[in-house]
Structures are given as C-alpha cells and as structure tokens.
Length: 213
Image (cartoon, rainbow, N blue to C red; front, top):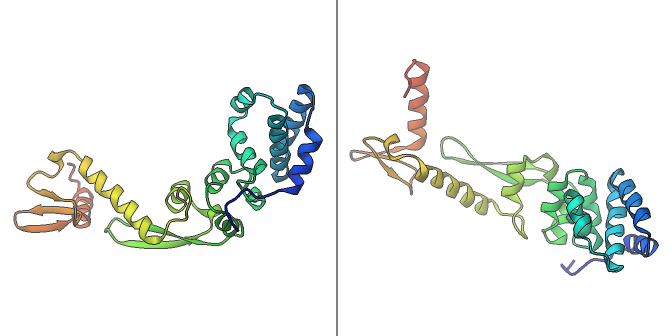
C-alpha cells in the first residue's frame, strides 16, 4: 500500500450529509461525536472535513478541541488507517502512529509485537517484545520514529547517546581523582579503566553500610 491518501467511503458519505449544516447543528453533532467511542472519531472526522469544504475558518474550533482536532483530521483525509481507531481514546498513541507508513499502521493495529531495547545499569542491552498498547510512553517514543519503526540498532544508538549525554552533563567534581571515558562509558583512575556499572555497584555497597556522599 502506498502512502498516497487512502479513501474512506464511509467518511465521504458522512461528509456529504454534514455539508452546509447550521453552526448550532454542527456544534451539537460534534459534541455528540466526541462522546462516542471509536465510531465518534469517524463522525468528528467527517464533520471537520465538511466544515472545511464549506470554507469555514476552523481556527477557533481547532483551539477549542485541540486534543482531538489533529487526530480526527488525520482520519478525515486518510492519513491514518481506520483500524487505528481501536486505540481510542489514547490520543497520543494514535497521533504518533498516524505519522507511520500505512503498512506499519496496519501491523500495529493488528497487535503485532515489536522489540523494545533496554539499556540496564550494567551497560548491557536487552530487549522486550511488546505491542503498542502495552508499551510505556517512553518506549513508544523510542520504537516509533518520525515515519518509521526503529530497528534494534537504531534504538541502541539512541539509548547510548542519551547515556553519554547524561555523563557529559554530570558536574566534574563528581569524578574527583578520575577522568571520564565517554567512549567506553566509565572512569580512568590512574592507569585503570573502571566501568560505570562497577562505580554504581560500589556506591550501592557504601550506602548500604551507611556512607553518604
């Protein structure tokens, strides 16, 4: 399936029904649509598109219904496959997924599991298999990029870059007698390299015996 606009016959039919509605009728219909579940998304999508095709300025409506406006518009103009509506009312997830190619949207909506890479405190990478609906918000941001589902290697690169950035931002006096080695993620003390994980374990042991830095 290409990334050209997909056609939604049902929404097209609704658009024709809602064209030329009086403002009060439109507002009532839109309020009713938002009170519904997934079907309400298609109703809201058709109402928005009908209003735009009637040439009505939508800025005030967009400001009033900011949380749903962009999502409904994605369905109205075929930027999101209809099956994504199953995630309603998770607005953030639908908005994130609507930026992906249609085949990926369909796979996600079908509850396919994807690898989520984890960087543990020892600097080791592992991964979990999760469906989009079971991912934490941070995991979704890691896995679903702008226009693609990130590979495990891409996720590793992001996590390592974050960890390195955190180390670089640490105050210099935290290291004391050592020198940071950002490439290997650790500290050089004298001629010895000490991995960050070993330092973290040392701190945990000291705190267990009552030492406070």
